[in-house]
Length: 352
Image 1 (cartoon, one colour):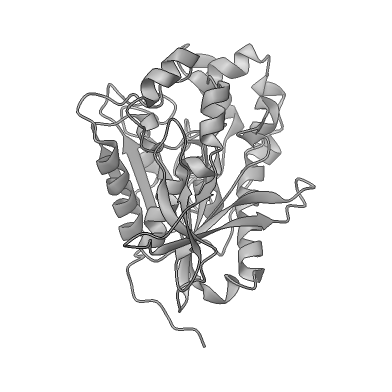
Image 2 (cartoon, rainbow, N blue to C red; image 1 turned 90 degrees about the vertical axis):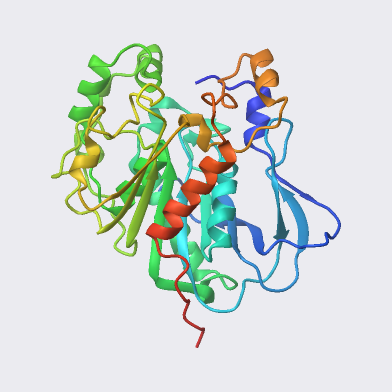
């Protein structure tokens, strides 16, 4: 996983306020913080939501590599109660790398909260800490606690419709929050036998990290949040060797989204029968395979010069999709799969 200053700056892109447009965006956004005693510090992130009145039109997640989009910074939430989606980014990623997804789900009626994961996020990454995968699930539970207590957003939450979604390592985080248990022995065996091109296992070896020295009791425990009634995982990782026993506590509402045809899928995220076979452990899951695409197709839309800029810096080719890929169409398909699976378009209850 290569991260040059250019890509790091792109992942950390923020808001830019500008003037009014003929058609103002229908989604609002605001910065969000949540106390996290398990880290001894607050979590930082963003919330996207159906907008009511007010707010300043702002360009979100725009930078030299990625296209952004418009939202209304500080707008009031739309009337009524809304479903919630807790969103988790991939390893070494950033909350705004999934801003396109947060915005798309907010357009379908959800309040979407994403936070950075200390130890496995942009600007705060260490392989050893990142392996404490349970802290990521705890991050999402803490974000939910803060959202429910928030004076602006709390009254608008439909507490019967709380979901979690994530990409890559974040996909495992969402599944974990829904009740999936990890298996340290299984992941250790996977890395021991993995081909050199399995990036995470290779990076662990290069960092001198011994998975056999880690505590199975923490790794294999349940970190389910009973408030979460459905989960979605986009090209999730960490599922090698997991069976129906590990998945027994997952809810009925599970969405699995895989990216790419057989030749384009990452070994570490391929849950099909030709990969880890994890999809068979979750027979209730709605499975969506999107192709042409690859793992990086779930990152933001790239500007025409994005691929060349990253190549100059020696970065990961996150703007390079397989031939014939329409990244915007891939994003639309992901949004549709999750919004439909979570039934976000259902009528929302009014506030008392």
